[in-house]
Image (cartoon, rainbow, N blue to C red; front, side):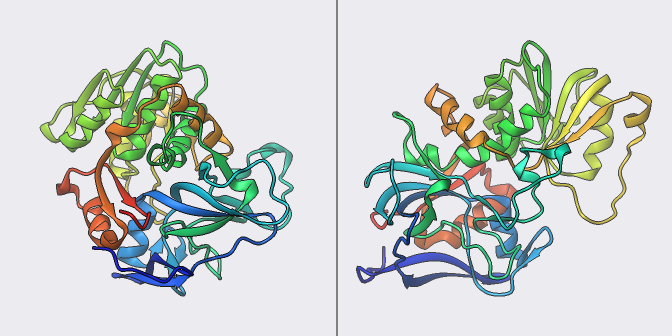
Length: 353
C-alpha cells in the first residue's frame, strides 16, 4: 500500500550506507532554466545499485552521504524550465545518464569518445562529492540536453532499458563487421543477454550463449541466442569462435574464454573485472594472437537503442520481476540473489503503482 505524500513532496529510494536503504520523503523538485521535470514511471535495477546497497561502494566510488539510486529510468515530462524548447508536457522520455564535468576537450586518440572523459557525472553515482542522485524517485529534474524522447510504440518500461541496451550496443560496436559471423557471449546476466540481442540486431550469423545459471540461459534464448552452453553441467565452451563477448566479469572465466576465441579472433571485455590482483590464465592471449578489447558504458548509443526498440528489438523477455517503489529493498534482494532466477528487476516509480 502506498503512503500518501503532500503535493509538493515525493518519495525516493535512498541508500544511506551499507545495508541501509530507505524510502525517504523529499521536496518535489522544480525545473530551473534549461531543465525538465520528469514524473518517473519505471526504473531498472543494475549491479551498481546492488553494490551501493550491500557494500556502500561501487567500484572505486564510495558513499559519503545518502544517495538516490538508479540510472536506468523513464517517465513523462511534467514541467519545462525556462528556455527549454522542442519538448512537451506529457511526452514519454528516457534519459542519457552521463554529464561531462569541466573541460570537454579530449586527446585526439579518443576524440568523440566521451565515455572515456576523466570526469563524468553519472546518475545514481557516488563518484563525486556531492554525489549525483539517480532516478529512483517519483520526480526528478534533468538537464534538457540529457532527455531522449521515446519513439512511437515504445513504452516507458521498455524506455527504462534503453540505457543497458546502449551498453550492449556499444560493446557490439567495439567489434565491427559482425554480419554473418559466429559470436559467443559468456555470462548471460542482463547485460550479457542484451549483448545477445544486440549482436543479433547487428546481423551476427550464429549467436551462442554460455552461463552457469539455467534461468539466465532461458533468458538468453528468448533474447535471440541460437544455442546455449550450460557451464553448471560441465558443458564446454565452443572452439574457434570469431568474436567473443565476455560479460561475466569473472577472472576464472578468462582462460576458457580465451581458449574459445579463434586464432586471430576478437575478445570484447564487457563485464567489469576486479580492480585488485586476481589469478587468471591469459597465455592464449599471446599464442593465439587474440585482440582483446575493453568496452565501457557508451557514447550516444542510447539513440541507437531507441531506434532498435522502435524497429522491434524486444527487451521484455529480460524482465523477470516488477516491484512498486515502496518495496525497493525487496526488489534489490531479488536482483542480488542468484537463486531467485531474476534477470532484470524493475521498479514501478509512479505513485499509482
